[in-house]
Image 1 (cartoon, helix red, strand yellow):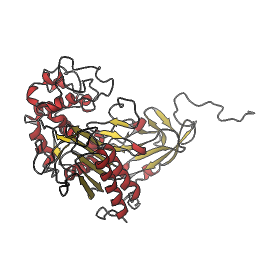
Image 2 (cartoon, one colour):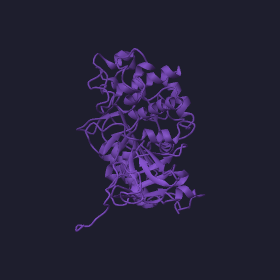
Image 3 (cartoon, one colour):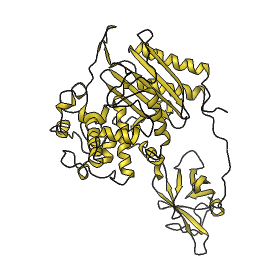
Image 4 (cartoon, helix red, strand yellow):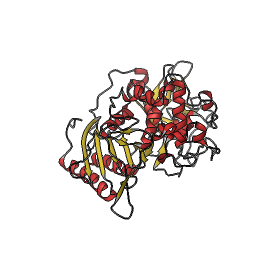
Amino acid sequence: MTSPSEELLPSTRRALLHRAATAQAEGRTPSLVAAVQRQGQPVWSGARTCVEGHAPDTDTQFRIGSITKTFTAVLVMRLRDEGLIHLDDPLEKHLPGTAAGDVTVYQLLGHSAGLGAETPSPWWERTPGTIRPELADVLGEKPRPHPAGHRHHYSNPGYTLLGSLIEAVRGASWEEVLRREILEPLGMRRTSAQPQAPHAGGWAVHPWADVLMPEQVEDLGLMAPAGQLWSTASDLLRFAAFLAEGDEQVLCAASVREMREPSAPSESGDSQSGYGLGVQIARPGGRTLIGHTGSLPGFLAALWFSVEDDVAAVVLSNATSGPPTGEVAADLVRIVAEAEPRIPEPWRPLPGVDGQLLALTGLWYWGTHTFVLKLNADRGLELRPLRATGRGAAFRAERDGTWTGLSGYYAGETLRIVRADDGTVDHLDLGSFVFTREPYDAGAAIPGGVDEGGWRGLGS
């Protein structure tokens, strides 16, 4: 059985190195560092550079751009979990006086608030944050090119508003709250708002000649919550493990899973991508990846993980353009997942059995559609169509004896047992749909009733 501490096969390690080396060479970036994690443990890292003997390692800082947004989103979710805010609160409730006070926290997290993608001129990534000392300078005179809630439209100023919201509620700077509530608990000692040696320098590579020049580095000021951070491959793998499993010191697993759920359709309508609450969702080749990409002048970064495969990858480079870091990180996940697929845990029976729940398992019918109800751990239920088509879902047991749908069409819907006067089960009610033990069971309370003649053949 494969354990997380086992090294990758030599063939897998070579394939990973080949992908990273190809990305650095074809992407014409001065340096590139990549790392992979399996089952929460680092299992591979590699680096390539144009400078002999000076390749970066997993402890070298690079600027990570918009991956910063995921950290900001975690801080907002912490406020929600503490009861200090609600995701459907209008921004005005906690941060009065902005030109976007009616948009909700949820819309800001998922980029559906209708705000502009960028600040007014000049280009905010290449100018000091001091030229935008107020939120009005970030939002500009026309901050809302779209109605709130109508579409996904990526917005950097939206995450500036979230950073200011955090500061208003916590009474401390975004940077201080980040350090205290995420970086220190997760042991991310090499992640910071300002570069700390050893760190890579950012470069611009000429598109038509193999020459380069240094990129300037700016403190983004109010825009920091959208893209300020510097980090390392090792620290980002720690963050990936947190995003996969949660950590009670930072954010519980349920809230992390909530962040990974799509919040709005992608702007292009592309079914292969989406956005949750502070995280991007990609589906290359049918594999679902969660994480974020990032860029600022001089730097490109990507973090992806697959929950199903329990594999994460980070790619960092120091060029304004060049290697497609998001694509490379996705390829690193794929290489490990396909070459050394995850070994499932051994099947084990439930520690105990509830006779009443066990009696509910088996075939159920919604009209003439056939479903199977299974009993899972912690009194959970799973309802699936017997054939390939149809709606199904897993359900979480609630204290009142009902179950709540966890995904798909039935997410958030209530499943309950309806009993007859004698205490026997009459039917299941799922969001008003009636499931019976027989197709259109004449003895069950089916809305509209059942034809008195019952089932018949063609000659009847």
